[in-house]
Length: 154
Image (cartoon, rainbow, N blue to C red; front, side):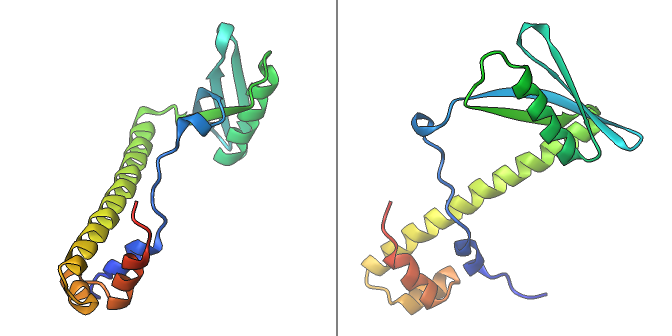
């Protein structure tokens, strides 16, 4: 088994939460999707008690088709719509939800690691440590430490 490279986390972009002031106002619609034979069918409830159903040969197709049908059915056209599709089957929905939650947790954990490593590198360097010593203690290359130290502080 190869040792884990702690450098790789710095090859990923930082997670920056969106500023809602700059966001395009979207209306989000929720739908359930089920597979019957070779066809996926999505069902969404719209305001006013309207129901929209779309079909597709794949999950991606049914999601695109549903989004278009929802947009076409709306009287007041928003700038953008969001369509959140989830499996109609409770076990499949729970499995997908668990995957999404785990991925979100990983993104936040990786950002936390980047933030605390940056802080530690700056602190150690301010105390007079060499970039090689900082890299050694944080298990990063001295080149990566130099790169971190040259990043603008947030």
